[in-house]
Amino acid sequence: MTITELTPPSGEPLTLAETKAHLRIDGATEDSLIEDLIRAARQSLEQATGLVLISRTFRLYRDDWPDGPVIQIAKSPVQSVDAVTVYDAAGLPQELTLTDAILDGRSRPARLVLAQRPVVEREINGIEIDFTAGFGETGTDIPDTLKRAMLLHVALLYECRGAVSVDSQPAAVPAGYDRLIAPFCRRGL
Image (cartoon, rainbow, N blue to C red; front, side):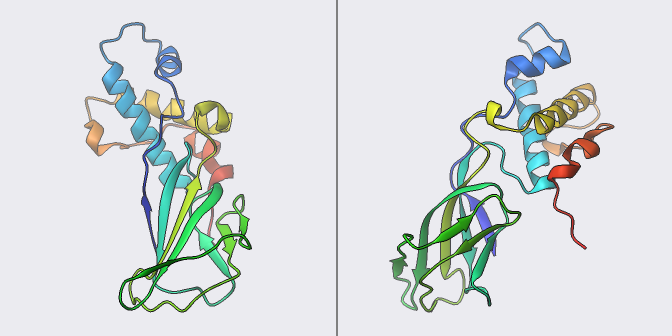
């Protein structure tokens, strides 16, 4: 099972202005750096939690159907399933109708049940599920606790910017960060 991002986010959860206010920066000389740090903090948070902050589309590739009726989608929250395509042995696609599909997009992982599940004849990546995930289009749709964690992370990255390059971020997380994101993390037993 592989998930790829089809469209990038339309923006970031934190605006440049609110981040600069948190950092107590007035000038515009480091705006580009701060925007890069915001992106790095978002990516780190999404990886740690499995959440998608700003809405965008993804594609889930599966080799075959799961044993049970439920298809799990590791990204959350899932807003919609946009298309399900199954490939035959010749590589020809068959798009399934989604009228009877049941989506529980808020559960972690998100769950999808399809009424029809035709035979998958292509051995690798024979099923493609396109879906939209995220809290919303702007930072106002994202829980404040996650935004606060990002602000703390950006502040630490900004302070340590000479020690570690932006490309190598995140090098560390600030004190309290783990406690802020803990309710949003999935823990395995």
